[in-house]
Every structure is written in structure tokens, then in C-alpha cells.
Length: 506
Image (cartoon, rainbow, N blue to C red; front, side, top):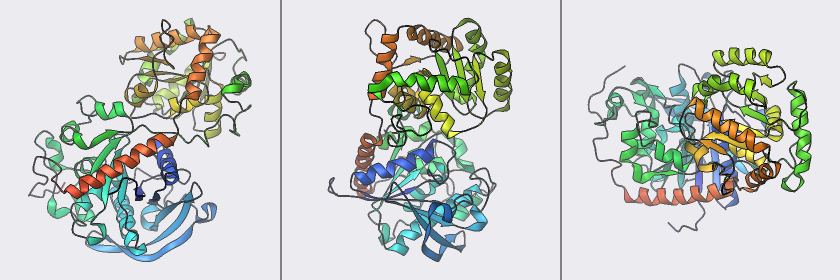
């Protein structure tokens, strides 16, 4: 295919901003299609219509009414609603009250069936509309059955004869593991379980993530470093042998951020708008954040911000080991926003009482407050054990907050440790997953903060960096053309038996 030819792209995602969001996946799929459309591609998105997605609130209109979607040995009817993002990207909502009219998005016993249905409905919708996609772009485990279907039940369907699949791994740790019954629901029970000589447990479970990796024409993760890390046992979550077999199809593309929405010059949620040429105004945001957190308004004291899920994966086991000595011995303030494990809720409650002049804690999630933390903190802490991409450090730099991170995944790709000898760097990072390494990085940052000219250069460097979706969208377009070329080759995706002949019900 001519690499200049515009593509028809259908993206599958369980969540999309602004309709339904639990994490960064929704932000990605709410932004990437807009950037692809600006490059001239016909890109569309499909997702479930959860109970929280009100047609009235979002102005949704029926697009295709009451057509059958295969599900197991029968079918169910669905109606598709249509909305838009970015003023022109169509978003199709799969309606099924039995499966989606619920308060939440995830963590239901029938999650496999719920996500299988919306993906199958998305494919059948293409036929209903007579719109033949070039690319089916599938995000995370919820959509991994689509590449599987393209190599099985849709293999000989002329409608999809030239359609290729791209599978994006946002977080390998969440794989979607179920029993054999799921294969019956998906219509691929005849093929049975995946067999791999180095991943024996795949032989007895349905691992959605593994199927996306195995069957997709191209695979990517959300940073170059993470694409390398997941080839190792340390980060591969038991799928590293499968990933190594497909490493010729595996790429890393860093996520971007929506620079129109995330813009300190126009953000309506912060106390004072500013940009790189008016950094003097930024101090108003720091003072306002200190006041909101109940802290003394001290401009000379470095303010550390954290916005995160409170879990070990995000480095809170390291934070718990050093937070008391940090509060006692280092001149700094600390503001946290997030929810997560109860042990960390309890810990930060105690810390806020113990250090009322140094610690502000908000055990909730609040988007306007998050923006104020980005705009008002001096440094932004992300000591993650692993981090496929990370958006927090990108947003922090956009708002002039200098990141302090562990050098892993996308954090390593975007934050270069400041070297006072050369002046090179845009933040502070540490390699070893170790509490003392974290403590040392924070001390280096707070000491560097005392040198206002150096600190200003770090802020400006971060604010001037381009982490918009434009560059990443071009890389995705290139990956799509690679997928089409691989699809045309029609060769077996791996050097081992794809299926197990016998079927064992779990």
C-alpha cells in the first residue's frame, strides 16, 4: 500500500475520555485519534455504552439499530449510538443493557463476555455501515480477541481481506485471564488453548493479552524502554517468551499528552495562567496550592507533588520507607492526591497529623485539584517499580514542575538525570529500586532547588519539550503501514504450534 494513502482506522477501547475513564488508557484513546485525523486519516473509535455514558449528556445519536451480534452459539441484538471527540472523530457506543447498564466499568464476573460482545459488535458494525477498515487498532486485553478472530473466524471473510491488526499493550500486568468457557463465547473453542513450550500455564487458561500478542500483525507498547523491558523475565509478566518470539513485530511508541487541554496558559482550574515566558506568575499557583493543602505559604521551600494510585507498583513501598526522615530532616513540603491500598490511606492520614505544616493529603481523585498540583508543585515524584509510559511526568514538565523519577519504562525515556557538571538533564532519576536511592534523588533535587537560576533552566527545558501527540501519531501511522505489509505476507506468526488440540474446561 502507498505509504501516503490515508487509512481507515477503527480503534477498540474499553474506555475513552471524556465518556468513561479509570486511567491513562482513556486519555490515550481520547487523544491519539484526534492527532491521526489531523494527519488525514479516517479514524473512528468503538467502546461499550456503560450506564454512566448518557446519550443526553454527550449528545449521542442512534447510528445502527437492533442488528444481531454473534455471541457463543446464538446472537444478541445491539443498537449503536454515535458521538464525537475532537470535533470530528466518530465514537461508536455498543449498547446492551444486560452487559453494560451498571455503575462501574470493570471487575464483574462476566467481564470476558462483556468485552467480547463489544468487540464483535464493532466488527459487525463495519459491515452494517459498509465501511472497510484498513486497520483494527486494539488497546489492552479487553480487545485482544479481535486479532485472534482475524486469524480464525474472519480469516476467509472477503470484507476484511485487506484489514490488518495492531495491538497496543498499555500495561502487561493486566492480562484478562479466564477459563475455557470464554472460548465458546468468543466462537473459537475449536482451536482450544494456546501452547507455548516456555509458558506452560498458557496451556490451561484463556489469557487475552497473550492472544493479542500472538495474533496481531503488529504489537506496540507505550514507550521504547518498556518494549525492551518486557522481553525480560523481570518485566515480562510470564509472557516474555511469547514476546521474544514476536520481537520482530514489537515496537515502542511513547504516549503523548493533549496539549490543548493540558495548557498552563489557558487551564481554567489553576489560580494564575502562565507560560514559559511568564514564569514569574507561577508562584501564585504555588501559594494557592499551599493554602488549599493547609500549608504555610513559603515560596522558598520546595513543594513535592504526587498524583497517583497508592500501590506498591507506583513506588509507595519506597516512599513509606523514607517519608519520615524526609519530613524530619529535609526542608520541603509534600502534597499528595490519590486513592489506593488501605495501608497507604492509613499511613498518609497519620503523616498529615504528624507533620501538619509539611504534609497535605487528599485521599480522593479530583481532576481540577490535579491540575493545581501540576501548576503549583516545584517537583513531581514518580518512583515507580515499573511504568509502561507514565503521563504524570509529561504533564508535570508541561506545567513547569521538575520530575523526580525512577529510571524505568517511559520515565527513563522522558526524564534525563540532571548532571551539575555539564548542566545536562531535565529532572532527577535513580536506577536501583531502593529506598535510599529514592531518598538521595530527593535530596539532590531539594538542594538543586536552592539555586534558582539552575532550577529555572530545568523548568524551561521541561516546558519547551514537545510531548504532544503529533510526533507519536506519525509513528503510529508508520506502524499501521508496517502492519498492512505484514498482513499481505500472510506468514505464520510464530515458530511453534499455535493451538492445543485437546480442550479442557476450567
